[in-house]
Length: 523
Image 1: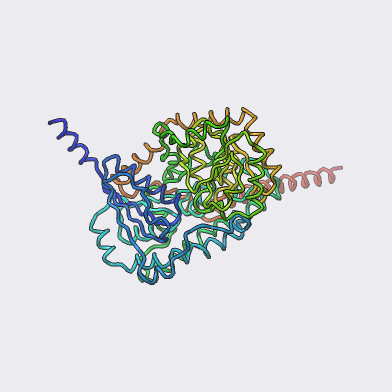
Image 2: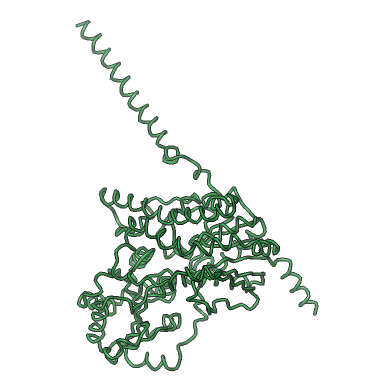
């Protein structure tokens, strides 16, 4: 009895009160934020999960597993429902190059996302009852993502004593700049760069420099547009997004130093990539799937995530994949496909379904290869599961994720514009399945991730508790972020050094000249 009392007492002493803001829009973003809420609640902390339904597509999501999490569902009003965005799928992604062009993305992100987020954000800031409810709970820390910035504006508006920003993607250059984290192209090329981890010519560096500038403006433009909305509603009582990020206690990045490209960071950026992975808890596949996996010696799993559907790919791509299946009768293909419209055209070695248990499949040794879009969630899963992959990036951070895996030698980057080329895809597929070095490197990468000195989940828990205990930690913000371009890059010092060198050379030449004149007079 005494032991139970002491346990409860200790738990209550170290229990903190957290608010996690998670807009219902992109499924991978929702999973990431829900995993954070579950992790903190599993540690015995009080967690409130506030989810504004920007779209209705995931109305019945069951992402919160811990029953102690208080969920606040927040819905559109009648006007909002009329203007509600589509289900979030990007049908033209398969054929359009705009999603992989940093120049076009600098316009597209704002044009697509700002209208989707605007009405819900305005409603949140007009709802005084909501503000009072959240303020009355006296949260120790508010967590919100730097994707839909409305949550961070809300955290600032209600006077949160400690804010932790997050990003479920790997990195966002505009966020890095606002935090003061270095983002030089020497370390972090533009997302559409074809030279991750490779030497660049001067022309390639110039091209990458301009592309990076455009991509930096992509989300900065979105956040500026959202700021205009909330500033108008609150009469300027919300700070600009760059000021808020300057003031956050920590920023949780969904990056992992053992998987990502090596790059510099700062103290307030905590890399938690992989905290959602539970390798020892991966359940086995169902009895039905188990029989299917036993049918042939090798199985290939194909999925392009939730935002982009296989059903929307061009007909020539579908036909190319069907030919690929027929060319490899000794391989079982499991394809996440959202309709039965092509079922009659498929050979017997193919099974399609609008959903497969991805975690279970990647954890099964009979699945030899994963054909994926390269979303960071899938990238992390396959790396931890020691799977090889053909990555066909479609948009956003996916090209960088593809090259990240290719850098480890566990995957091949395959252009979405080449999917219609059956022979090319067939060659890459068989090359990877028949070359054991891919699997050997995948095994080593997985082992490296499993045996990190500090587990990512431990980082989440300890830094969240630290943010609750101490509140804002302004000394973690580097002074360098407040420097101007000339001072930051030491151009003034370089100029002075050059001036001194040239002055020295000038005076040496002057002395030599005078000496020569004196000598000539004597002669």
